[in-house]
Image (tube, rainbow, N blue to C red):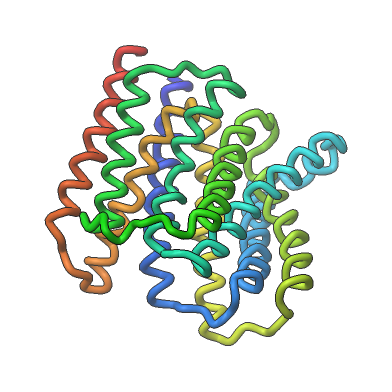
Length: 296
């Protein structure tokens, strides 16, 4: 009964994470920031760290940090670096390549998770997982391109390979996070603390330190607390209870839900291709769910 409850709570964590990540395009359009991506990452990381710090204090887990060994801290800082690199390379891609192409490459990280799980976590790879990933990725491409594949020519392959490296980094972060056997809240808090350090280095090297405007702060706080901070806590906690390769296909729901939020809040045009993309993602989820029933 206890394991059943933990599994259901983990499902809620994954769902909440997907919902929060789906809101990113809508929030980005509503609260456009004048900061460059180095500056934005710096301030967002600070807010994310503070928000998770408050959660850790509330859960009374903060004292546990002082018992961690140097090896654990090195592991957590390394994982924080992988996560930081994902966003750094992703923003680089959006600044130097076709946005749609970057978005398609970005959503290769669930696919990377499945393959990394084979070698690192020794999870099984089945035909069901393969077809679940395939249908999910096709659904994502249909929604992102709106069915117009001529928008994708991948001419800036060098930049897209850099974005792909970032996607691989986040997949590796997600898989290795399952290995870290410490309190999830403290782990995420240290990830963001390390991101602050890394972003100080990148701002000092490639940008300048500025004071955000009130409009910038609105975007930073929303992103730092919810879209980046709390969502990561949900993601890491959800991964603790599931095989990473089983969770990965459900991430393809994110762009579908993102399109829905854009339509709902910003009156974006409703396209029939969205429903076709949704159908592919639903089939992807059903394939994965059938496997779960067999295992039970």
